[in-house]
Length: 95
Image (spheres, one colour):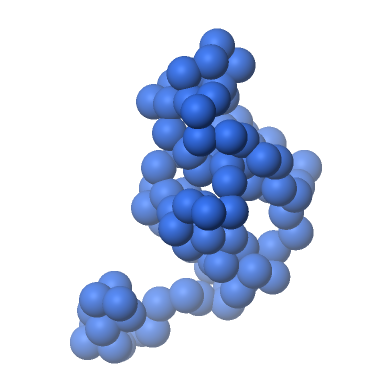
């Protein structure tokens, strides 16, 4: 199953996740979710915290952009997003 990124392109958090998907070369689909739909029943079924963006995977849905990034890095370690050097990795996080 391909990853589906759900949310809207004006969101910095959405774009942060999309950038990681692109940088890692992972196939993904996009599904537009309007900002105001965060409290609908369907939305809460997919993202119990009512947060967007979220991703749909074969394992289920995952929300909160940093949790998504951590998952993508752990599940798809190559190419790595963070340098192995601790200082260089800290500078990346600083950005």
